Image (cartoon, rainbow, N blue to C red; front, side, top):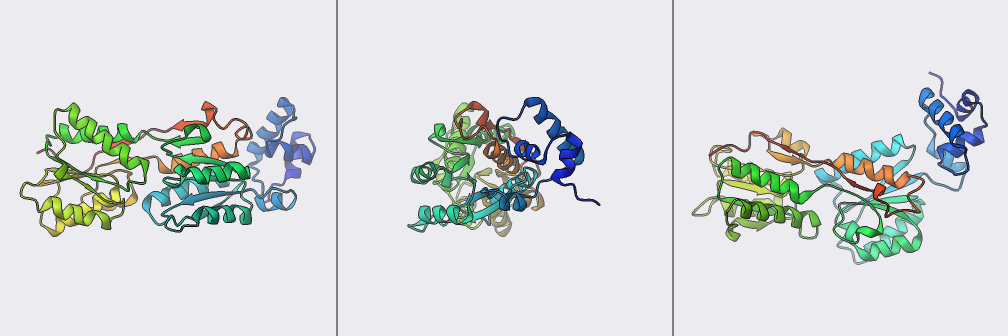
Length: 338
């Protein structure tokens, strides 16, 4: 199959290769009717610019960075996939950079990575996206950034989020509708704003249902599978066991599920378990987990779209660059009526 080149697009559109390049790169001062013709021909020929060739012929790198504090997690995998696929579609390349928040020099290390790689813009995930010193550094360096699920300073950049409070509220309401009244909750990493929002949604809906939140049934993990094992053991060996456990993410919900199996607590006959995220492991577990489907890949893709928008740098706080994506409650076999 013949590789389509910029010259092929130029000939079909009746313009010069330089004009095609200007349209693809989002440069100004191209007449709207010419831009429309070029974009139509690009679509018709399925032309895919080569980012490396473009970077060699200009001062731009066409590289975007994705910064994650836990690149091995299920959440990170979905975010990486969404960002990678959309970057390719936008003719950019993606560099995934892990951030060690335990290092006292992590902000300097991020800055060094950005400069060494000549990144044109970056995507920041929680809790990295809430660090004011990091944002100050990016602003001073003139690096465009978009944040996923920030908890503060919303005016500083474009952002993509979902309503964690409402999603947790819906899951709690679902458990109450199944007849559960003693519902335990396992919090996530306190450094993540989503942890607080999900817990607040749980508490608000318990109060709405006239149910007290027993603090003996509220324990804390850090979003990892292992962090849920201790809390799950404490809950399931208590004198009065809760009838349902709502964990702040699927990894911790799976920790509860494994603990229940170890202690011969049948799920869902004796205990209902709900998670949050809809990670692949939630579908592969037995029984498969009832959970909230968080649109992680879609959020990352939307962040890339904002970052490469030619108008973004001059209007980061424009409402066009604030996206709220929908979630979905997925009811599976880990929950049941009592």
